[in-house]
Image (cartoon, rainbow, N blue to C red; front, top):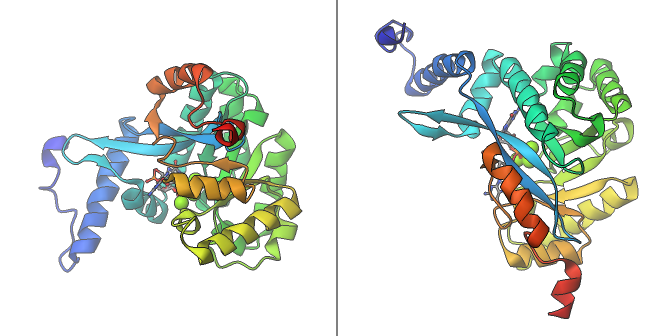
Length: 286
Ligand code: C2E
Ligand code: MG
Ligand code: MG
Ligand code: MG
């Protein structure tokens, strides 16, 4: 079957280069899912007060012998167009819960969900099965959704979110501020955390507009009683600004990139010696 790759007529005449590259990704992604090649890597979430790891976000990684690591930015959109996102999302959820069940029991795991996974109708049982099979307590699982999901204003989506929370699972609003939805949905949708998109975090400390936006997201989040996490923290200046604004959690290359599961246990052990960043108190003493 593999010998025929590329020689078979997958490509219709008239397809432009972009369409061809998408088709190539679709074919290879189907193979990668079937051959169990996709893996989550885990990026730490840091409590900005204590400097300690509170949990990890699972990010899909696709190692390809010819192309190296293929970026999710390239294949998640294709997975969504072709419906492969459901298989991908299911395997990520199962694998992440299984890996996390072996971590210390105060460490959480966040898994990204595509809006399409809410349309299939079996999301609740998928989550329940992943928790049951892994033995992970529901309170250690966080599901990341985006504002586009809420744009659908569907009662089925709302019912699923409520049912997930009734299990004890937490809901995070990912990439906050990049969607087009109005603030009114914040009242009707149940969620536990806001993740400030990295485009607002970039340049904090030197960019006053970014700082004003981040400040208002934080005060909005605090008013709603939810946890606020900043994504894409890359510099000490961004970190100290986020701390000054009272942001709860941070995630970004400043702390760590996403790493394979084999490195997570040793990362957590190393933390017993010293936190990834100094706690606020140590900062003030310095
Ligand atoms: P996201 O959920 O917002 O994940 C955060 C992305 O920001 C990750 O990119 C992460 O590597 C990157 N990042 C983290 N810290 C920094 C930083 O300090 N600087 C910069 N420049 N980037 C940082 P990644 O892994 O390429 O994933 C991109 C997107 O693909 C994710 O954005 C998410 O929307 C999607 N994705 C990844 N894995 C999955 C998955 O299993 N299921 C679904 N549905 N989507 C996924
Ligand atoms: Mg995410
Ligand atoms: Mg995000
Ligand atoms: Mg993002």
